[in-house]
Image 1 (cartoon, rainbow over the protein chains, first blue to last red):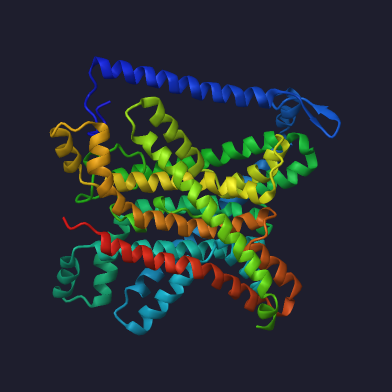
Image 2: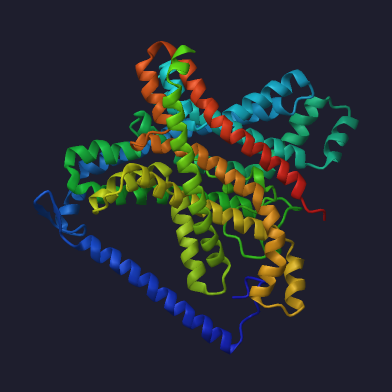
Length: 302
Length: 215
């Protein structure tokens, strides 16, 4: 309870009041959930035929088939595959963008800035369509390339912010040791910036994984397309809701475990940054890096 | 280029839909996000737990799946909403936890000593939040909130995959019809998006510099 400085460790009266409020809220939420579950469990009419409720056995019996799980596994594998290739590409492109963007030559820096702004301001989905139509690469590479370039641009920007946030003395020390500007950047500044921004970068990779679901729209057979379209049409509309729930659970499991890794990394941050106990409310996320606008946890990306 | 000029009314119509989605879901997400953020920092444990679950659940679900739910699963559950409204609901739901997180990170950005000072002066929860924390958090929250809106602008394109005629669907439709002007059409659509996102981005960077608190 003493997690926040906003209120005192409550006394007996406040504690009672807070407990009463808590119970009321729990009751309200429970009532809401119960209502939803009750409604879902009711049989429903669909064009004259009465179908059983959503928790009826006939809505779930396909999930004993091993074949179905193999198909779902294939979909998940396709999602992870696209995400893995795109993640590697995004990291490489991100490092490249950060290098070019902080170059001392204006002729390199300015065009890079324009290209970066262009990529960051455009929806990934449009980029996928562009690659699909113009380069006619097939859906897999459209998804991977678009995600790689888009997230590369964002990772590049956060790396640049990491470089800018380093103490000036780091570069000066490097230069005074006789390193060239480029050497100092590669050997002194970059490793530190990368380490500093690691939680942000990993959070962005979680976003990337979520974004592979856009493959659903451009015709790449990833998880959602496999479960909802391909399986959905072969087993019938009756199972749509069950399939939806299964897909949701798979996504949540994968993303939450990745987010947990990001959080672990954020906790063992280098000294000098804000630690969770210096904050007003306890933080469960990694939004404490101190660079609000470059923090992808604060951004909504597809 | 001709294909772009000839189809300008179609572009404008699509752009209108994109803006409609942006403004309406943006406004509603702001409201819901504020409520969620308030619940998150409230002293009532079940409220903050609920807000926590809501945030984690929606932030870890792909937008495509949220919109799929609104467009295809909700009708099965008996909703009769047109696709535009389904997309609006999906985008609002998906954006609201990001708004809440931006608000909360702004509150966390206020130095802890401010809250401690307020508390040690004897101000209560309501007084210290409304008089000390929020006025300072407000200025730090504006740039990240604008970034959330920029992301929402780009996210409206996903609605194009679910039978809403906005810029992305316009791109698909017009490139289908004009196979010889694909690049011009796609660049024109990109320009419409950039016309919203780049000014917002500049505004955000400007405000961030202007509102930065000297400490």
